[in-house]
Image (tube, rainbow, N blue to C red; front, side):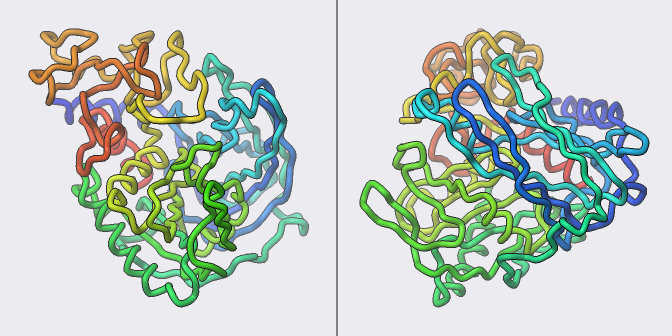
Length: 424
């Protein structure tokens, strides 16, 4: 029943969004806009950095308009001659997370960010939006683009060879994941190749990915790093690496991220991609991910498989963390008077928009954490980093605990919907 309901909803959503004819407006290559995003806890500003032409477009040539009300940000591309919307995507960034930290209340900071879309044939306007605390989108910035401008850079600053880890077909009909090596030196490229095979196997150990393996391509980039490992500031360890990842992001030891998004994009540009995964050569536990930004996991830890799959849930499907008993730097990340945008959390402000139809009429709402409800879709209190006021779909899930092949039905539906969007 759940599957039939999901497919019906997917059909209705897809059929109500008019898509754009790719060949009319775009070339099959990429335009990248790099910009600076700066501000503090209460305000933000955008500053154009540069425009870059990349040789390959790895995304859909059918689904140009984003149907998802996800992410902290959105950008839209308008054809200048006709004023028509020809492309849009939603996303989040490291800056959006930083704004919820104590540091952001005391200082102003700048982060480099970027967006990509198919290379336009004609002049266009790109409009950037940001959400307020009520999740309403507001226009923040716009850029006029002449695709024939000789100021659009064409060189690849970090050019490397790619290789196929898993190939199922043309990129425009698949979800393309590019795996970037971080902290693998020249002597460790064979190790990186083996790790790409191993971690791709991890992804397809879990439902619903395993049932839809043929919807994915996975690429690796042979990008040797100057040194092996990554930065661990708390241990006074500093390594020279290509993506400049570091533990202790936002002063949380396990949070392993990078603010050097330009380098990440430069390396990823060596293959077609929809999602970027940074694989870090370290045995220390950690990782992280941000929706339509990048995901990060480590390669030599006892929890490496569940970290890899958990983080991809964030980066790919905008799934929220369902735990509430681990250290984070965030403050009031999910206000309890607003319904979260993520599919797997609710504050019950608008539960009709979430998984209400999947909850049996005999299951109490909220649902007590009792053995008899251990395999039941319900409404369990605790999630989104807080113990009260935010609710998750099941007692346990891959988005809550260190577990393998354990996505709940709600998370699985969100993932399936995203796979279908990219691979139709």
